[in-house]
Image (tube, rainbow, N blue to C red):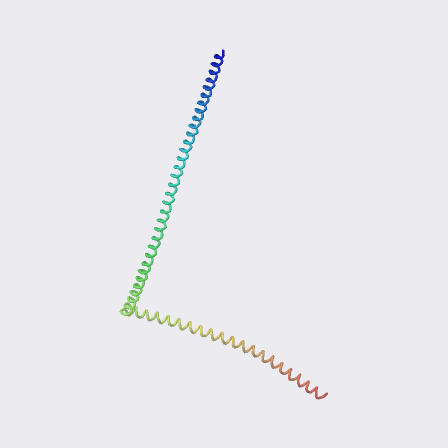
Length: 193
């Protein structure tokens, strides 16, 4: 019986060892599965993070490229505008000079033509002399009117000043007579006392 108990004890311990080994294997397998699952999740997260980073980097690069292109386009447009303005200014300056030269030439040609026509044509010469005479007559008449107007205004102001002076002198004379009579009266009245 002792043998049977020992055998039963050995069998129980063997079963216990076997159960412990099985539990240990199961725990190790479970831990390994959890580790694999965690590793897969980490790898997936890393893949997604890397993909998001690549997408963000591509988007940032595209935006930077578009911004650079917009800056270049704006700079080119401003440069073209300034060049156009300078060209227009240069063209205007040239056209002003040409126009002024042509106007001066036309004036000289017109004057020379007028002198030539007047010198060669007695009727035109007489007409021009009559025009000059009329213009001189108008200028003389205007000057005479101004002289008459100035003389009338001066005479009117002089008459007004004479009247004012006359009024003031008569007022002053009457005051002087009053002062003299008052003085005589006082002197005469003072000697009687």
